[in-house]
Length: 154
Image (cartoon, rainbow, N blue to C red; front, side, top):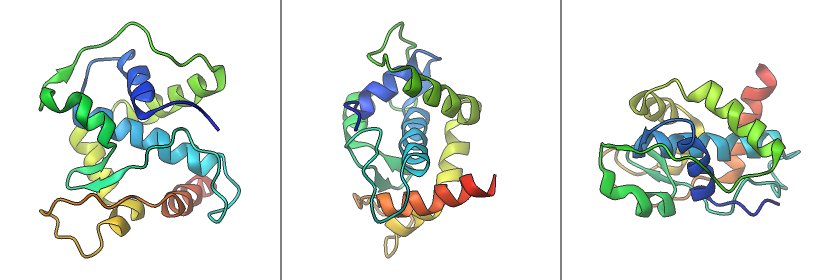
């Protein structure tokens, strides 16, 4: 089990480039989701997670409330690039670099669109209108099943 938070992971991505809040949320979500998919054996026993906070299925895709609270005042403006972060584990850094390499080139809107096509967000939004706010948690089990299947198809 790691002792990181959504904010630590966000800080790591902010060492790469300045980012909008929405793009930062989606990058942190993909790191959270892929870590679960690649570091657990099955959906019934998910113990290996990147950090404790669970994402919520908001209108514009997965959101971590702590990250929202920290950066909400930026609106659509970019958050400045930073110089350092608290992550010193080489395996975690390598993993986050892979997430950046795969998802960092997409725009915030493209990342939002992608999450809206994926089962974990869709399942968490069941019964909620596409324009209605929601704080429904995105299930770790749904995350594992969806992204693990993608990983095994690759």
